[in-house]
Amino acid sequence: GAGVSQSPSNKVTEKGKDVELRCDPISGHTALYWYRQSLGQGLEFLIYFQGNSAPDKSGLPSDRFSAERTGGSVSTLTIQRTQQEDSAVYLCASTEGAGELFFGEGSRLTVL
Amino acid sequence: QKEVEQNSGPLSVPEGAIASLNCTYSDRGSQSFFWYRQYSGKSPELIMFIYSNGDKEDGRFTAQLNKASQYVSLLIRDSQPSDSATYLCAVTAGGYNKLIFGAGTRLAVHP
Image (cartoon, rainbow over all chains, first blue to last red; front, top):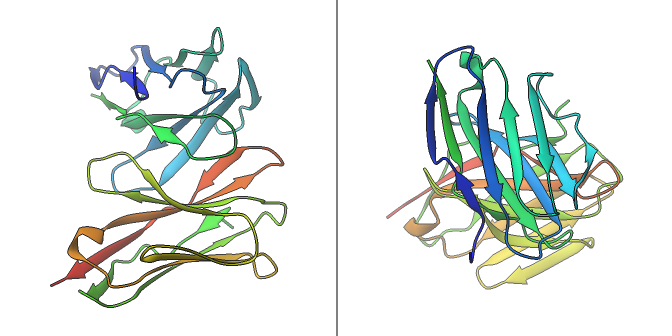
């Protein structure tokens, strides 16, 4: 595809359930980022991949959060035992290097 | 101290005026600085980037960087109502390409 693709666009889940959010970056982009944006707030850095490696996982809010990237392409962000405070828009972005980040449309997560 | 700080606003300016948006950052090792614009309900999009001290102009936009003061700003000349959005300052940190965003400044340009 031409841009960064994220799925699902909307997810409503019950507290305690696990969710998986998917990001398909722009072809050829080596770097991939996950951010979280709560209503009216800025972007909270979660994790960054260079290729399949994540140099810095310190942004993940708790051990319920994990992410992986396979084949230097698709990435999955997994949230286990979701809590209401996990409700937010999860944004994925990719870039060729240290330049412009191209963002997906985001996955809006609502935990009831 | 937050890694990237911005005044949340709203910053209200009349159409045609200059809007000045400011950002400070804490990591002296930061090398790259970006301004993103985010319309309500949309994803951020890049407006400008700057790597060296001084000014960088692109159309109605000018980015200014002062590494000694750990300060970066964005000037928007001849502001238009269509410029009304949240402007996010982003800075590389941690010695590599980790990009940290500020909370954003909401700009409102009124006719």
